[in-house]
Image 1 (tube, helix red, strand yellow):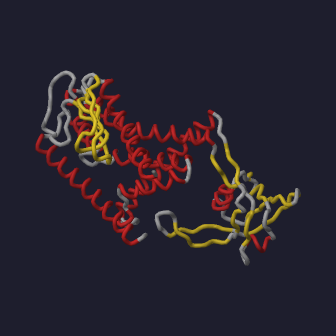
Image 2 (image 1 turned 120 degrees about the vertical axis):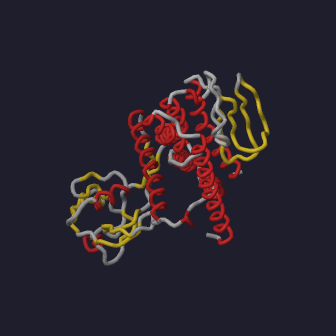
Image 3 (image 1 turned 180 degrees about the vertical axis):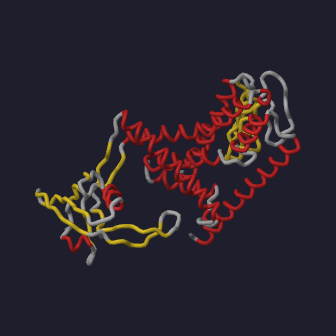
Length: 352
């Protein structure tokens, strides 16, 4: 069941991406010949207007085939009024941007839905206090509720670390214990740690863990929109940083995951509940949006690059250049897909 949900999620993400291209193309009067979810043999097709809507056998992508635009043959141009390649470069760029934009919009909608379903957050109650730590020596005890850190109000557990790591000197805590407020002073300990990319960082800690008390936060309309915007922005930044770390070698190529990993993690998220599924689907949607903007020929970003060149120089790239660049782009994409698949299989065989 989890795998079916994962494939459905992928299909929805692809559908939204291609729907963005489709809507922008039709807005500018471009004829769309095919709208396909999946590649390969067509399992189902239906003509609606002049567009063939299809579901194909390999559900690992999709495409919108516009008149006068064909990734498999960049020289297959049409000069009819309703062709993609006769439109102005800025119009073609908008058509290309519409796909990734649809993915960002879908992520935003999912985060907004999460905000209204209710976001579970840990409350700032102390669970365990490690021995010989600043918290231990200052007198913090189990079930203390941290109300303030250096004058900043603490609403949730996540706020504690944020505030402490934003300070440089000793800190003052206001703690609620048995309906009394107690003021404690302590000096955080600096430790070496690793971030999510495995890079060495330093953190300031006081030596406590959460008690586990939770609260569900429901956002109103304005706060929900703000929450959705911030989450979409943070997810986008995370994906961009991940790509940067991969290119610079901070993150090894063995960490690159393929479609098996995506399906596997999506299936696990679906079994953990609707919130987990929405969170992961939003992250994958942002991922698709960012990756498609990379300046690699055969991706939206590569086509945008060609159109920007035409806007700046007043002439389009030669057919030979387009052909060579597209072949290189496909070679890069296929290599990355094969590497991801190899890593997936390696993890499955190795049990990692």
